[in-house]
Image (cartoon, rainbow, N blue to C red; front, side):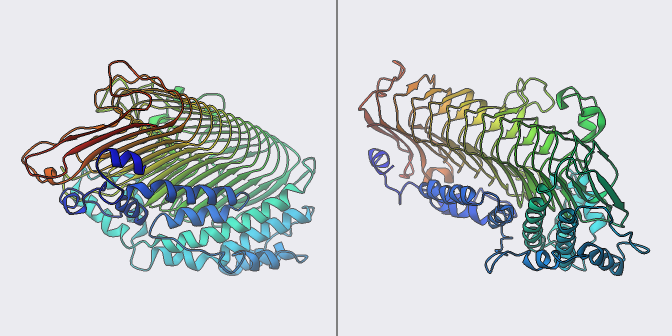
Length: 638
């Protein structure tokens, strides 16, 4: 990095976004402190992101730590395990004989159960202890949930306005009402509680996994917050509102469960320890992909399986080849809530329409798949997407996986190119831009996709694969394997309008195809776009504004550290180049920067770019009349 910046006549201190100019253009509420830190020094982003990556590796089998990390990306962070397991008290109380019945009596005293609870006879002791652990932790943390909303929040009205998407700003009156209500919600309390519940559910999952899948039993009790269902040994169909379901055997079907979204409940959890299971938004999607469903658009905005709206939802599936399919918001989708989907084993299918598979807005949406060759598909805002004050996180720890953001069925045609969908997927931070509407924009959240092992394929339309928009941060980290990335516009480590886009691939011989514009380490309008390739013989097929390109006071950086690489870019503004800004504005006082660096290896470059060659170094500068830094480009092949 130091060498590349030096070729452009810069260093890490001078190659920065100019805050004194940026503040005249940037506006938006709920900006993440992590985004502010990254904007303050673009060249520390790889270090800051690597810290998060290492924490992900260390947090295997510790979902409460993942929740805590996600919360710390926002202003709502806490560390409930600083002094030990935050669910330890609930775990210890649930070990004694008769613990579940005592917990049910506690629910009765709280008014959640009416009448005398039926004793859970014939239920394996491990399952009884698992259920008690979860329910005890739920009751322990109810005061934190009440504190989340406070006494002055019209929660019913906020839910209605959120479902009507008032936050998009089309109606300024309802938009202002929504923001006023949203300001009264303190998500720090709910995120703190969700760490405790995640730790309790992890313990309960271990207990459930110890029960033989052939053990046949069933017990159910109704509550004001949904049913408690304990079952195993046969195929079940779970419908209706569920507070807690533990199922230890059989190929089961869950219709819109677990789902937290009705007015009476704030919590819903499913633990399924065995079987090839199906989790769908309705039965019509059991054998039909979302892209072929006639109801897909009508279901958007409703609550699907593994979604949380104004509460929390956990889905832990421990074994089997499972199907997760939802046209409604779901599959790790949190809106003013925390939703966590954990799949421990199996070759799984994740199929969503929008706002799912790791989606967070004013909350956290997390999907963690431990192993298996999995398929992820969806249309818009899927596969690790953060909207305002939210974090969406998709973690896949092992397997040869396929990530697809639908680009053939045009439900979300892009303003940039109507022949492609707006994907906003696969590690995307997205904001609500209203500077040209009412001047009250919402800063984007943080969207992360982390794949730790396997030969993977990523494809999307416009906006994806480590992309940030309007103060949002999106990152894609692939740690291992020979991977293929295909996208269209604003992809593969790119960003627009004060955003940050980051793609890092650690190992393998990879291929990157970007069809139109803004890709492979490109920043536009006070944004930062970075692509870091650490090893492998890679191929890059780019177009305009690619491979380390800066535009309109943006910073674009491309770094390939080793390997014999092949560059097929057509340009223009590629391979370490930057476009000058329009004359006569404040923008003339701020830097635009494009940096290209290729480390060791024998590389191939297009003949149409004579400066690009093995051992080549060239710095360029387009000065402006104001005497400002201008547009600076740097090309280095070491």
